[in-house]
Image (cartoon, rainbow, N blue to C red; front, side, top):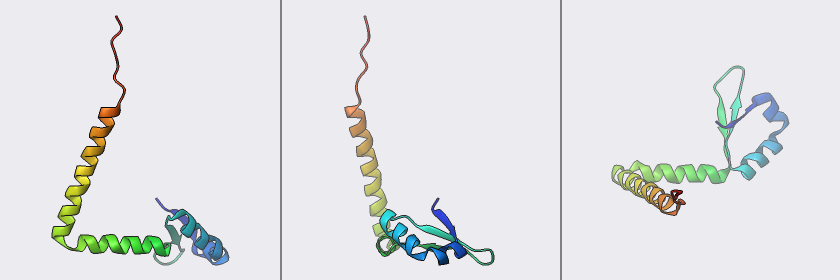
Length: 91
């Protein structure tokens, strides 16, 4: 869940909010009394989201990316299991 800020507070603390989203690379949810909320993102995060969306637009590419991600997750699990200390029985 992203940090939240009111529209009124954002107007008063805009420079601080811009610094925060750029330094933390986390979105900031802007809420208003009347109207829909919006999100403030750093330009870097926005570019990363756009690149990810572009890669997933092609169903073939999306399928390949999902398969690669699953394989990485399996490898991480195998590696963690291999490096887990083994318990020995006491005699």
